[in-house]
Amino acid sequence: MERKDIILSAKNINKYFLDPIRFKALDEVSFEAYKGEFLTLVGKSGSGKSTLLYCLSTMDTNYEGEIQINNQIVTGKSINDLAAVRNANIGFVFQFHYLLPEFSCLKNVMLPALKLGRYSYEEVEVRAMQKLKILGIQEQALKPASKLSGGQQQRVAIARALINDPAIIMGDEPTGNLDTKNTQIVFDIFKEISSEFGQTIIAVTHDNDFAKASDRIIELADGCIVS
Ligand code: ADP
Ligand code: MG
Image (cartoon, rainbow, N blue to C red; front, top):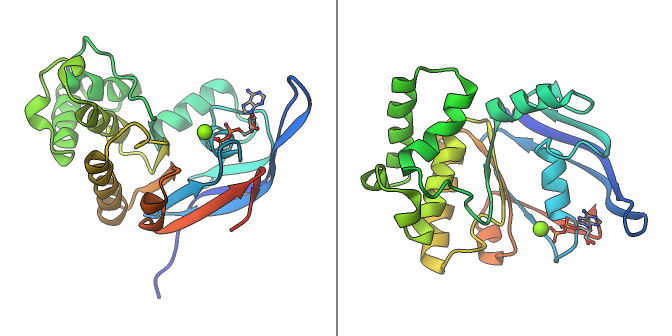
C-alpha cells in the first residue's frame, strides 16, 4: 500500500483582520498536503485564498492555530528562522513574475540559491541551467528577463521557485496573467514537478479547468473549507 507522507499541515487556522473593522478572514481551516500532490485552492474572490496562502507560506505570522512544514512546527518561530524555513522548503510563483528586468534569466534563477549558500557559484549556475531546461527556456538563459514574452517570464519565475529544490511550490494565481496556451504549459510543468520529482504544489486559482485537472481541490467560502 502506498504511504502518503504529509508535507504540510494546517490545524484550526483562524485569522482576523482588524482594520477597518474586526473581520474573520479564516475560520478553523484544517487540512493536510501530501508529498508529490498537486493541490489547488479555489473559491470566490474574497473567500480567503490569498490570506490562507500567506499564512501557509509563513510570510504572515499573525494567525491562530498551528502550521507544520516538513514535520517542523513553524508557528511561533522567529522572523529569521522563518526566512530560513522558507528559503529551504518553499518556492513561490506569483501572478506577476517579479523578475529583475535588467538581470539575465539565468541570474534571476540563481539568486535564491546564492542567498541560501548551499552550493558554490559555479554549481548554482549549472543547477539554474538545469531548471531552465526543465522549463524549456534554456535558450533564453543569457537574455535580460525584460526581453522575454509574458509566458516565458513566468517560466523563468517557476525555474527560480525550483532552484533550491523546495518540498513545496506555492502559487497565488500563477497563471492569472497568462493566455490559454501558456496556462497549459505551466499546468503541465506543475504536473511533472509533482509526479516526477515528488514536490508538492499548492496553487490558488480561479481557473476551473486548471483546478479540475489537479490532484485535489480545496474550496474556500467565507474563510471556511467547504469541500
Ligand atoms: P481571495 O484571495 O480569496 O480573493 P483574500 O484572502 O485576499 O481573498 O481576502 C479575504 C478577505 O479578507 C476579503 O474579505 C478581504 O477584503 C479581506 N482582507 C484581505 N486582506 C486584508 C487586509 N490587509 N486588511 C483587511 N482585510 C483584508
Ligand atoms: Mg487572492
